[in-house]
Each structure stands twice: as structure tokens, then as C-alpha cells.
Image 1: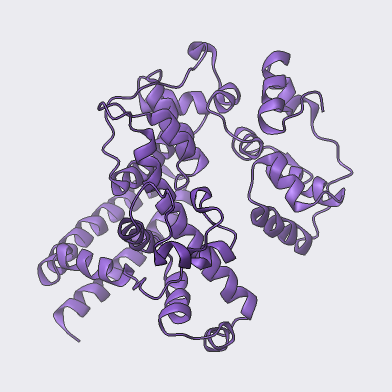
Image 2 (image 1 turned 120 degrees about the horizontal axis):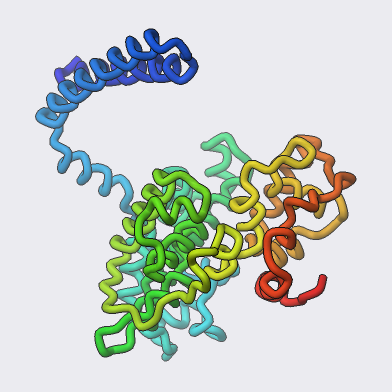
Length: 376
């Protein structure tokens, strides 16, 4: 065993032992015992730092990052763009053309050259999971059939097809995010940050909401923002850091904002009204605004999905109503069925409804926003 391997093994042992003490600390109530555990944890942290210094000397962080980026690279030369059409994910500005026609030179107003599109696609490939990268490489670059990949990986054909489709969709979302940059710039140095954050597909809804609230300049600190949304400050910090990392990787380079989100009555605003004013879909309310509420032993979010499933509402209809992807609803339906969840007979708690938390005018706006039909 090399010195590097020995240090890594020692680091793993130290980290595992420190984790055990941390678990014990969480359960311990005696003050003296807690103080002793904290002292042990502090000692292990110092030992871990010392071992990490040795590892960084033997294997510099820059070299590790370079290897990691190399592993994330995928040869896209064999990827046929018609896959986007076959997977139902094509761009509106090439409507009526196949990707083969575009590559062959058909004039289409793409807004950017094919070389740049392929460059963006290669960047998007770095966002793939290891499994997606493996399957896509086997299918496109090595020419394996879905059946052969499934046989090698010990899964069924539908799993391979789903993983490849999800990976290609993830790459396409990255290209869409890159294309959106040019449409949000005014050509005079300004940038429509509000529109970009509203539409960029590579942010989660929680990341989108927090970025929009920061852009509004109403919250004066992360602590104030966390207090308004009734979440931990660490959650705000972590979510903004991840969103900022994604924006930096996109290399937006936007100028001063052309507009800012309108937040009415910030002093009286709460997580419900802020979700509405930042344009969050209906599922967001059930998942985040009612977090911690249980109905029939399940979360409010799962309750709302289950009662719709039990009523025979299709995944596509639920997806439109709640603002989710149909595949997300289908997956949730399957999970709830496997878990034998039956809550449709339980009425929704009246004191925990969105209507009880919002004034009538705001609630009607919410209905129109997420369903397109008020009064239902």
C-alpha cells in the first residue's frame, strides 16, 4: 500500500469514528458527557486536518480536480441531434426541420452556430450522473443496443431508455440556459435578470425563489430571508451558494438588472405570499409552505398527490395543475401505490389550507396563476 493509500485509509477511519461520536452527541442529554464528546470530536477534527494536509501534499487538489473533470467529459461526436426530437425535446426555432437537415446546412434561425451549440452540449454533458454518462457513451459512442446495455448492467430495457432520455434532457436544458443569455441582454450593457431567473431551466424552484428575492433587494440579510420563509439560515446559504455556482458555470456575465421582482408589503409578507409573488407553482406550496404538516400519516404534499390518484385523476392532469413534470407525478403515483397509502377519505385540514392563510383576492390570483381557472 502506497503512502497516499495509507493516508486515505486513515482518513476514512478517523471520519467514521468522528461520525459515531457526533451521533452519540446528538442523543446525549447529560452535560458532562456532552462536553467530553465535544472534546473528542474536536480532537478528531484536528487529526483529520493533519491527515488531509498529507494527502494534499501527495495528491494536490488541482490534480484531483483535473482528473474529476476528465472523468466528466463525454465524446459527443456520435450523438445524433435527432435524439432531441425523438425524445420530445426539440427547440421551437427549428420546428419543421430535423437535426440532420440542420447539420446538413438547412437555413434555420438558431440564434447561434452549430459549433457553439455542440460546445454547449459538451458542457451540459459534465452535468450528467455517472450512470447517465455510462449509458449514453455505450449507446452512442460504442454502438451498443438498449438490450445489450441492459444485459451488461443487470437492468431492464426501459430503465436504460429512461436513463439515456433523462441524461439527454439534462444536456438540452443546459443548452437552453446558454441560449437564454443572449435573449435577456439588451445590447446596451443591461441584463434582464428577472426574466432569466424566471425561465432558466437548470435551477430548482427553491433556488429560483431565493435568487429572485435577493434580486428584489428587500431582504437585508440571509437571516431575514430565512425568517420570512421559516427555514434555517444554513438552508438559505447552501441554496444560494449552489444557485450561484450554477450561474457562474453558465458564464452569464450579465450587466445591471433591467428590472427587479415586485414584492408588495415586504414587512407583512410571509412564505405563502412570497411564494405567490415569485411565481412558484402549486406543488411548491404543498411541499415547502406546508412542510411539517401531516395528513393521515403522510406529508401534505404526498396527501395532495395521493387523494388525486385515488380519485382517478391522470398524472398529466395533476402535472398541469400542480406545476410538475408528468414523469414526476407518475413516479409519485407508483411510490404511493407500493406503500399502500390511502388518504382520499380524509378531508384536507381547513385551518391548514392555502385559502385560510391568504386573503380572498390573493387566493384568486393564485388559482389563476397555477390552474388558469379561478373559483374551482
